[in-house]
Image 1: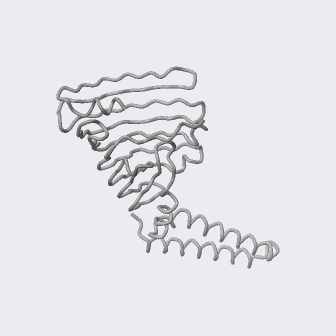
Image 2: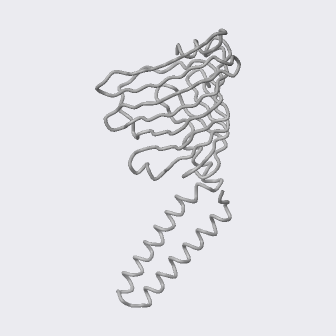
Image 3: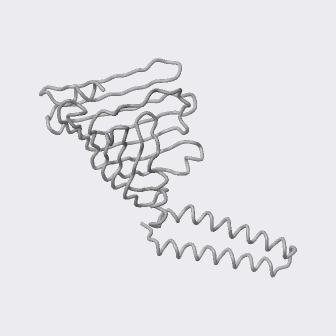
Length: 244
C-alpha cells in the first residue's frame, strides 16, 4: 500500500513536471505569454485537484474526513450507518475495522474487519462493481424496527457484486436461538429498468448439515422468481432467520 510519504513525493514530482512544462511553453513565445501563463495556472490547479482526489484519501486526514461524511448516512428503512477504522486505498481496495447499522432502538447489525475490492471507474456509468466483499464476521443482534415505507425513487446506481463472504452470527433476539453460518453469495441489481438477481448459500457451523441455498430473480414487469432449498434437522437458527 502506498504510504503518506510516497503520496507526497508523487504529488511533488507531478507538480514540478507541470510547472517546468509551463515555463518551457512561455519561453517559446509561440503564444502571447499572458494566455500561456493562464493556461499553465489552470493546468497546475487541475493537476493538484486530481492528485488531491486520487491520493489525498490515502492520508490519515483524508480517511478521517470520509468517515465523518459517511457516519450518520441513512440506509432507507434500515437505519443509519457508522464506520470506524477506514484503511487501504479507497479507490481500489479498502478495509473498515468496524461497521454498524442502528435504528431508533440502537445497533442491530455489526460487522468486523470488512474489506472491499471494487472498480471506481465504473461509477462514471452509474454502476457500483465490487469484485469481492468480505467480512470476518457479521452479527445480527436483533430484528430491525424498519421505518415506514415511502415511495421508492429507484436505485441511484446499479449494484454488481461478484462475491460476498462472511461468518454470520445470529443472536437469539434475531432468529429465536443462537446460530452461526458461513455465508457466500452474489448480487446484481439494475438501476435502468429495475430488476435483478442473486444467489446465497448459508452453511451452519454449530449444526453441520443444516443449510440454505437460494436463488432469486425479479423485474419490474415480471413476478419474483425464488428457488430455495433449506434443511434444518436439529432445531437451529435457520427457521427463524428465513422467516424474516
